[in-house]
Image (tube, helix red, strand yellow):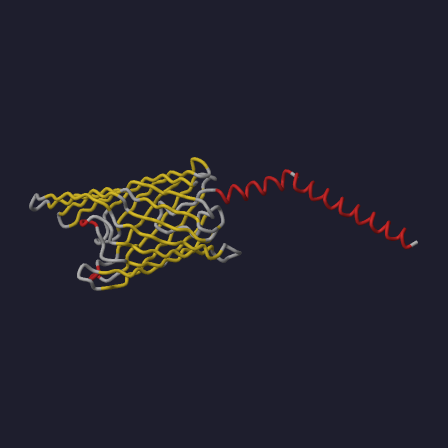
Length: 284
């Protein structure tokens, strides 16, 4: 009798396991589940860049992934009869150490600048390389409910460029990026930060960093944005506040390649009147 009971329990347990496995197989093979997992995977692999807007993304590139964000940029400024023109080739290299940490190398690349004084007719042209910045990005929090996705960026700018474009010593900076998903495929991002700088005479000072961007995804591949950016908030003694109003767009050629462009209008005399950029980014 005990043997029969044990046999019956064993048979029922085997049937239950087989039924459970069949349900799992049916679930895994269902189109809805497969499409959902494929969409999640595609979203994970989709390129997310830190350009062309000033406010950085809170996302990292992912463990073992490499991303390059290259561009050409142009600035023009007319102030008190002095005309300034500058071309540069900014680029950013990003490598994922873990899913939430990435290494970064950033520079404005090669710079060609020309200054012309209309009063004297004297023009000066200079060319060379910009300083290089090494950094880390940490994706600290995923978005949840009304809470934003949050990332932190830690950078060191080194006085490594040509003499005409070299900064003063090592300049640390810290920034926080917070991003909210809004209705109607819109998003809001803010980026406060602080930079520890040094004047040519060796005097140290602290400047603020702030940006706010409003973005809109028109399709899966096309996005546009408007933005207010202040790369430097400082007293006039240290160069004053630099502020721009930016408008731009990006388009995904594939899930791992992007082209983008943006135009900026200076909002005060400390800022170039106009700036423009055109970029290409790829994820590997």
